[in-house]
Amino acid sequence: MTYGRHQGGHRPPPPGRRPPRGPRQHQQARMMPVPGSERARQAPRRPQSTRVAPPPAQPPPPAPRRPTSGGRPRRRRWSFGKVLLSLLLVFLLFVGVVWFYLDSSINRIDALPDYEGRPAAGEGTNWLLVGSDSREGLDEERMAELSTGDTGGKRTDTIMIAHIPDNDTPPTLLSLPRDSRVEIPGHGVNKINAAFSFGGAPLLVRTVEQATGLRIDHYAEIGFGGFAEVVDAIGGVEMDIPEEMRDTKTGIVIPAGTQTLDGAQALGFVRMRYSEATPRSDLDRVANQRKFIGALASEIASPATLLNPFDVFPLLGAVPDALTLDEDDHLHHLVALAWAMRGIGGGGVVTTTVPVTSASAENWDPAKSEALFEALRTDSPIPEEVLME
Image (cartoon, rainbow, N blue to C red; front, side, top):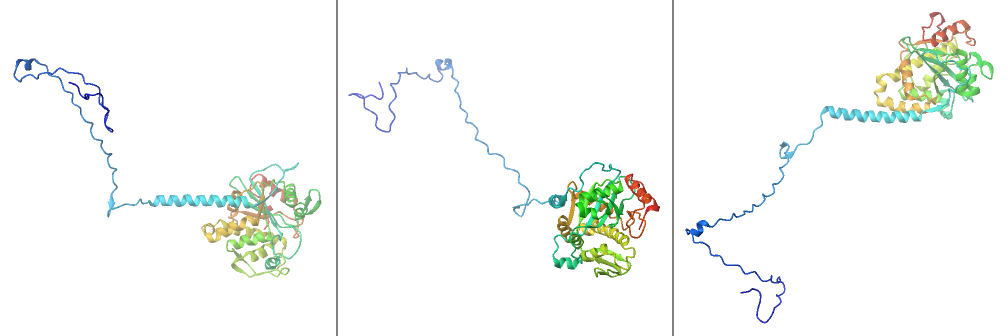
């Protein structure tokens, strides 16, 4: 017997059904042995293969839950140390950005060009500090407020050498009177401040180096307006004025007693020489300049200024426009200078003037001035007999 065939020929399968398979092969019918018969006992049993279903996929173990409070996940809390460290990093980043801005904003000139016959470098570090009478950037109202007058040109009211030693001898702040007569390269003998008028900072530096034998390593210059701005930026500078100072030329009056000088008063103080309080004229003026520089350095370096944003930020804003440095000088050099000069008021810095032969301060004492310069060149203590108030 066959399946899938009908008389009368092959009929196609109805649509949607699979076509019939080919004819099945006839299989011989096997009789199942009767249980208990001999055949049943002899017939071997085929092992039946049992297909085992794979185990169902196990879901991943649940993530451990953090302890909750009130059914809500607890927020991650920052420890005090982490908060403090983050604030410190932000502060350091801010300081770095401000430092870079200030250092790149300061005015710079080539004040220390090399030349034939320049003195060899000695011990320690020498700064040439110059206070010019430049009125650049000042309008008529501001010049009247500062009592600068309207003199044209550009001269030096202040010339100082700040010596920072490499050993344990104290730093020195040395004044060079502006009327000192010295050899100016290319211009003969003249007052030392004329060098600035003839050739600016480079000629002044060369004149000072040739006259003293000291090699200048750094240069800083400040004008009238910049000086007053720096003083006002830190809220003034406290000074003890022994007696009333009344300048008969400018009309500036500074009363006696301990007081805080603002920018205009401070400028009048460091320039005053036509007063009963300054009988030695320029010699008294340079002595007052050193006192004020010491008080100013102490004020800037004090924690009360550095930790007070109302003083620090105005000071940082005033410094770039106020100062002119050599092109190789940077902000950290200024910080080192201010730190070294902070001890003037307490006697930690030697302050003196180049020894002169008369009250006019035009001529230097050859022997004493050379002894002074030699001590600075070698970082040696300055002999007492050559020191001048």
